[in-house]
Image (cartoon, rainbow over all chains, first blue to last red; front, side):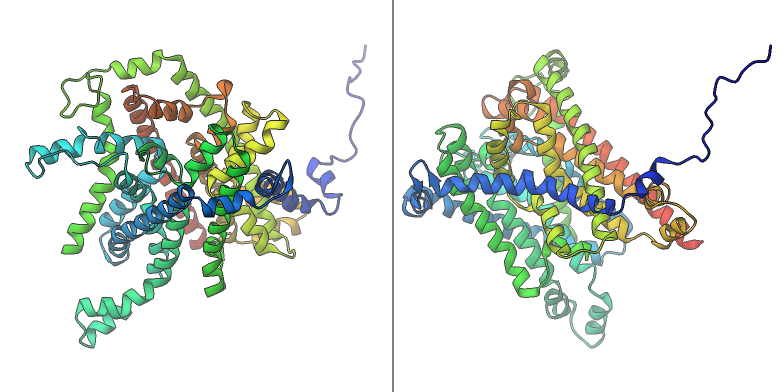
Length: 300
Length: 262
C-alpha cells in the first residue's frame, strides 16, 4: 500500500501575521490612541470627575468648600505649613546638592564620580518607606543621633528631632535631594569648563571665576531643580504622615483624613484642587519664562 | 579642599541613614536600642513565619510584574507614536504622558479611588495593576523615547526597503536595538509598583494588602522590629537591582561603541 500523506493542504504562499496586519491602513495610529486613551480615561477623566465634587454637592453649584479653605484658620495654617516645609526642604537640598553636582562636573577622578553617583542614586531607588523608617530610628528621643550626641557630651537633653517640622524637613531633604542633584548636574555638565580656565588665565582667582562665570551659567539648573523639589514637596504624603506630629499636618494629609476619617469628599476634592492648581501654576512659570517645558527637557 | 570635606560629609549623610537599619535588624532587643545589646536572627525568622508579611511580599511581586508588563507595552507604544508619527499637538501628548509623574500622587490616588469604587475595582489586583501602570508609564515613556531618539532610523528604512512590514521591522530591527532602554524602563516600572504606597492605601483592601501597605500600617500603629528585617531585605534587593541596571547600562554603552566603530 502506498502511504497517503495526511497533510493534503499545502499553503501556496506563507503569509505572516505581520504582513496580514499591514494590510490595514491607519493601524499605526493605535500607537497614539491606546496610551493616550489609557492616561486620559484613568488619569484625567477620574480627576475631572473628582474635582467636580468641590463645586457641586447635593444642592447644586457651590463655592462653599473652596472659600471654606481660605477662610478657616486651621486650613490656612496647613497651607502655610505646607509651603514653609517645602521651602525649607528646597533650600536645604540646594545647599547640599550644589557642591555635590559641582564636584561631579569638576572632578577628574572617575572614582569620585562613581561614588557620588551611587550615593545619590542608590537611596533614590530604595523604598520610600524604608528610608522613612530609617529616619525614625535615627531621630527618636533615644535614637542613634541623640545617643551619640549625649555620649559625646555635646547636649544634655535629647533633642526633639521627630514628630515635628524638624524631622519632616530632615527626612524630606534626604529623599528629594537626588532630584536636585540630577537637575543641577544636567545643566552643569553642559557648561564649558574652559570658560573657567580662561577666567583664571586672565587673572581671576578661582573663587571669583566661580562666582562670576560658573554660578550664573548654572542658574537654569538651580531654578528647575528648586521648582521640581518644591512641587514634589507640597504634594508629599508618606514622610510627613509618619514623621510629623499632630501639629505638622500638610495638605496631602488633610486630603487623606477627609477621605478616610471624616468622609467629607467635597472638602477633600476642594483641597486637592488647590494643590493641583498650585502645582500647575508652579510648572507654568518656567514655561512662560523660557518657553520650554521643564519636564520634557531631556527629550528635546 | 573644603569642597571635598563638605561633599564627603553629604555622601555619608546620604548613605548612612540607610545602612543604619541593617545592624538594627540583627539586634536581639525588642526596641530599637542603641548601642545594640546582642545579636540574633529572630526578626528574620519572624518575617518568614508571619503570613501577613510573606503573602504581602508575594502580592507585591505579582502586581509589580504585571504593572511592568502593561506599562512597558503602553510606554513603548507612546514612545513610538512620538518618534515615528507626525501629528498635531505632539508636545501636548508628551506632557500628558509624563503628567502622572508630576501631579501629586495623592490626587491620582483619590481620583482613581473615586472612579474605581463604583466599578468594583477597589480591593482587586486588576485595579491596582491599572493604577500602578498609570504611575509607571511616564518613566518607561521617558527612557524608551530617549533610546529611540538615539537610534539610527536608516536601519529601519533598510529593513522595510527589503520587504519587511513596519511591524516586522519593529520586532526584528528596532526592538533588539532599543532593548537596553526597554529593559531599564521595565525595571523602573517594577520598582515603582513594588514600592507604591499612596495609591494602594486608597485602592487596596484586605485581599490586596501588599508589602508596602503592611509596612505602612506597621509604622503607623506600632513599630515592630520585624520592620528592620524587612527593610534590610529590601535594601539588599534594591542594591542588587541597581547594580544589574548599571550592568545593562554598561552593556548598552559598549554596544553603542561597537556600533559606532563599525
